[in-house]
Image (cartoon, rainbow, N blue to C red):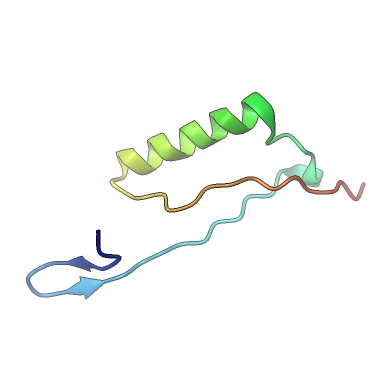
Length: 64
């Protein structure tokens, strides 16, 4: 699949980089919670006819 989308009068390539940080940087996006969040993101993207190219979670250090 080409990274460009095409119509008869236009060609485009649109990508978004989204960073979501939980409050106080708690490590909640691990295990089953992380799996459920990933499922929800993919379901929403499919509903909006969008494509998720890469999805990953990084454990962060809590600086509290």
